[in-house]
Image 1 (cartoon, one colour):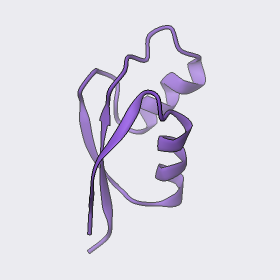
Image 2: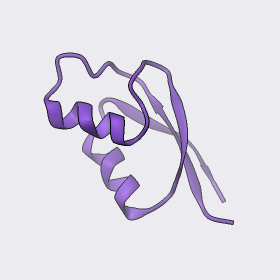
Image 3: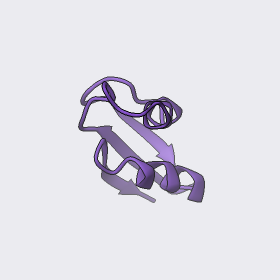
Image 4: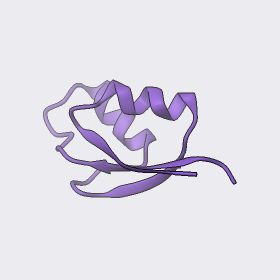
Length: 62
């Protein structure tokens, strides 16, 4: 079983640079409090680390 992380959007992407909004969309997030379970890969971790003020890791599974 692959490791996964649960990511939740905690802040709005409105009035943010376009690259940050695109990162949220790439993570499957675009509305407040929305959560996604994503595979724990270096690319996903990099995307989460690029917008730490907009998302938080709720849970790490596996």
